Length: 339
Ligand code: NAD
Ligand code: DAU
Image (cartoon, rainbow, N blue to C red):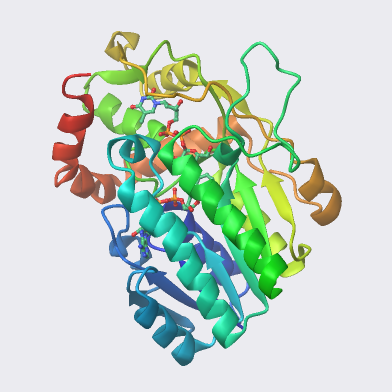
């Protein structure tokens, strides 16, 4: 079987490729990635020359390139990770989010219709449900929760989900959608909360906490997300949405304090900065459906996962120091310089 993985040079996509190669070495994996600022070919260094693997640098919005690839590879399954993924960037510059996340998804699905596939899987996010109030811990996002987005990023992901459902209903495309909560683990780009705090902490730089730091996210170790996607694309029901999350809600400030403690630094590094515009208060997933239908449960406890993650960033400094020494400096200055 050939699996086309888009966005495989990014955080979750690369972890997914490693997981699939281990779990299903018989399958051929083709990775399509544009290598934007968030994509990193060195992440895939260990598999680039492996049999049953091919890397292709192209843009999912480039219809000709995508059709050419389908003609060459005839993938059986398409798993679509490629996206602009950072909320803060979407607030500064929404345009590219609409192009990649909406139009790119349409191009891919058109190719699936034209060449035929057995499954198209859309990697979506819990952010399409909007947020929950802090004073209602009894509320969770289920697959029936209405879509209600806050940022250009989440709106573009929601638009893509609607398109995926339309292609299923209108053209009978065999699709599935997963909506996962916040991931953490190896190879996450240092613009996101956990790696940003680890990198700053190690350099004794201020730790910029938005607002009061009381926003809640539902953290899942990336490998548990990959396991869930593998199950859904192989055994999940066509046309269905599956929520993925591990009932692991934490306030941002508590995560930051935990990282400080693990690295033996001082809480004086914490700096409260201007809040994110439209900042979602709380995300919390009800994963009952994927558990009942596919037997999925998260396997990595947060205490273990965060330690593994911090260890990984300590052991792989070259990977992220290369990233933060380049264009990232301009991004950081623009985003945090006067915050
Ligand atoms: P990421 O930003 O780390 O990686 C995105 C990858 O997509 C990069 O390799 C980039 O080069 C590639 N890409 C971007 N635009 C492209 C284009 N036009 N053509 C081809 N490739 C392109 O993202 P991530 O955090 O790994 O997220 C992957 C997917 O999972 C996204 O769809 C995101 O919405 C979703 N998701 C992420 C999380 C999370 O916590 N990170 C949680 C739930 C869902
Ligand atoms: O819930 C799933 C989503 O999780 C994914 O769809 C997104 O692709 C992914 O980026 C993530 O979105 P968040 O906005 O929740 O993640 P981020 O790491 O950017 O921020 C997590 C929380 O930490 C959020 O409440 C904002 C806060 N934060 C973030 C940064 C980067 C800070 O307080 N300071 C920071 O410097």
